Length: 266
Ligand code: BV8
Image 1: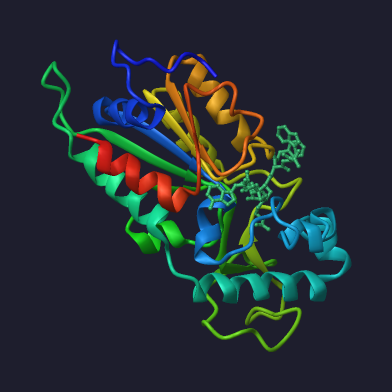
Image 2: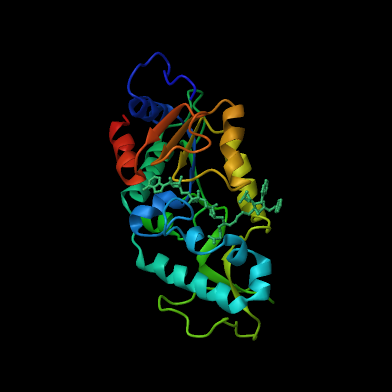
């Protein structure tokens, strides 16, 4: 971990991280499954009943798996979809929505530049809980499980809250429906990658929350931000491959740490 002292201020890591966020005009946040854990949604890796412990992602989260067994893949995804719709955003999601409001409310730069601060929330999550918590500038790097799309026309539909009854589901034209997520081996949406690159290229603070930092290209953004001189903060209940490289590693649950960071901001 790089030395944590910030602009001569010597406080605790969380106080220093809060000070950095209080002063930043361009902030990027990356979230992973860990921020939704306190909403009751299982993560992929970190617990015995993690999604990937019970299901091998290469058997379910790839186009090849869908082509080979569309019924099993769509049953798994519809099960998760219904769970996401039944879940509620938690205090961590709410704190990020408040952080966005504070950053974007900041006045123009010293040179009287127009517009307030810029806040970009990059998420690997497909559950749409950030949007339900009030976050506005959300970039869904890996798509959304709430929307599905026709494999023939690309038309998107939003199934209702109840579980599907036909597997694999079909679109009105008769072709298979698939979740509008990015599977392993698939390119991320071009608009999402462009938005991420643009935000990461100019951010002053990069905040990584609830991710094991192992899936690319999402896991590469913090390194790009650090190379561009951004201060980096991690919030995670466990150490990860980036815990030693960040300026401030805040160990704890996102639902506890994030509200405390916002409370400490001036
Ligand atoms: C691509 C949607 C071009 C579907 C997902 C280098 C460059 C580019 C690609 C690659 C590369 N190397 C390898 C690749 C291929 C691959 C990849 O990265 N593989 C990994 C396994 C090595 N990447 C791709 O295929 C990407 N496509 O780049 O296209 C290409 C293609 C092929 C080859 C080259 C280039 C597409 C990746 C997207 C896959 N789709 N999701 C779905 O949801 O089913 S990935 C999915 O898994 C998530 O979206 C997320 O990204 C990942 C899980 O990670 P996390 O979110 O971090 O969750 P995890 O459980 O792992 O960790 C949770 C963390 O939270 C833990 O640290 C835990 O301690 C913490 N935590 C738990 N509770 C709390 C908490 N923290 C705080 N508070 C708590 N309460």
